[in-house]
Amino acid sequence: MGISQTFRGGIHPKEISNGKAVTGPLPVIEAPAPLRVTVAMSQHVGAPAACCVKVGDVVNMGQIIGQAQGAISAPVHASVSGKVVSVGTCIVPNGREVAAVVIQNDFEDRWDEAMLAQKQSGDVAPERIIQMARDFGITGLGGATFPTAVKLDTSKLDPKPDTLIINGSECEPYLTSDHRLMVEKADSIADGIMLAMKASGVSKAFVGIEDNKMDAVEAMKKAAAGRFEVVALPAKYPQGFEKMLIYSLTGRKVPDGALPSAVQCVVLNVGTCAALSEAVREGHPIVKRVVTISGHVGKPGNYLVRIGTSTMDLADMVGGFGPDVRKIVIGGPMMGMTVPTLNIPVTRNYGGLLALGDEGVAPKESACIRCGRCIKACPMHLMPTRIDAFVRHSDFDGAINAGAMTCMECGSCTYVCPAKRELTQSIRMAKTIARTRKS
Image 1: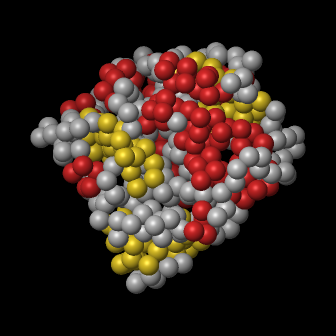
Image 2 (image 1 turned 90 degrees about the vertical axis):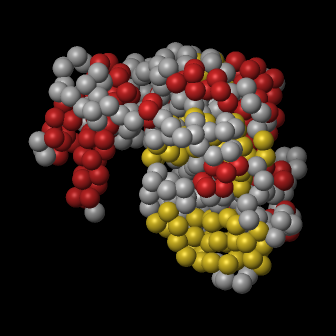
């Protein structure tokens, strides 16, 4: 049985209810395919894919256009059928410039027969599921984009995982794409969960969904049909982080610096499970994903969009942004990336597009008043104000010794700080410098 408890710390942003109420009731709409897509070769954790097409090539939808490189990598597939018109670079949501392929859409949506031929029905061997997850480029769709095949292959782990944890919490304010996916595609998610259980060899699975999405809880319980447990969790950010979710559902505590496998768990997102099912059952790699578009836009909603669609095309599709928009965020307001341009393509971890006004602009900092709210809010039991003080005095060793590397960068401390100190940003700086010193 799932424990359904809560972790220490965390916050309750008002935007969790206010922002989600706008798009949560809205069904997913399939967006029109764009004239061109720019498909990044690096949209996953690990080594970038190596481009395997050239200008002038005609490609099919789902065809591999980037080959995986190494054990931790993922192939990349064409999201439309058409002609390759450019092989160059693009800027992805995190600001990095990466290799990319631009495809001119012929609007035939001609699926690649080699991929379709691999679809499986009925019972599928664990090794086959893992191989298909690898070949079809299935990665985490909750934000981290870690290659799913690596998680499912537990053959070298000792002790073996015994529990599959499915993240349906979607704790970020505004975002409702996973919510709608659970309501509308519960059977596909359930099939993906069963495939993941078989591939990883676990004996039980829990789906954690926050209790502000009870329609999703009921849909997933019906789809589960007693094969796995669906648990309603208290709505609190950052409920969807791996360590928080594992503790809430099992009571197990992942040690600092360790992976979920350290407590015999495998963690997947609901979107990842749906993608795994679509790969195995339909022969479809990840060429589309659901994106929540919200804030000061003409038509907020949840849209199924092609990978490689430009942010500019998404903005045009929803009627543009309001005149009071001051910040564009890709992802959620807590963990997402503020971007200076709309010339950024949709990638696998592109879960949201938010057009924010004054609510998205941080007020001016003032002196720390030593209220301790950041300490109370920190789910990792850190003292963010102490780490911040070390960073501001350029004492990065002190910041690391105070636990900076343990920080998940959830932003809870910054959110609750009455002095509006940029605590998360200070900690992120300390971590960046620490990694630079190691390289």
